Length: 82
Image 1 (cartoon, helix red, strand yellow):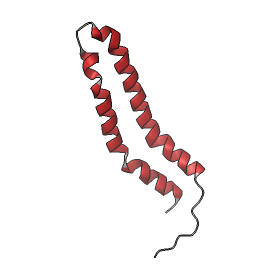
Image 2 (cartoon, helix red, strand yellow):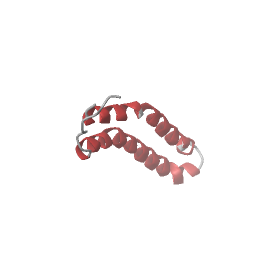
Image 3 (cartoon, one colour):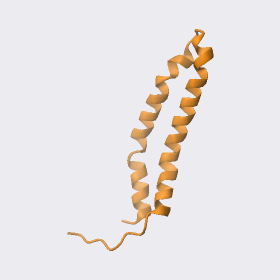
Image 4 (cartoon, one colour):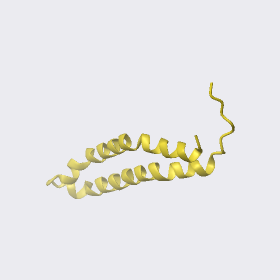
């Protein structure tokens, strides 16, 4: 298997479970953001920062990590089937 194929398969295999965990983490802070109490005034930026940070982290993990692994990993040597 080429390193390009391996990197793409590794990224796509775990992308949806990682997205689910990311959305779950973001939604944990949503009640603060949706609150009508005075806590929202102080904590709405917390939800926004966590949401942006986690979603960008997910995007980078499924795009840049495979791209960097293709670039950094050496070509595989001959493999034996046994």
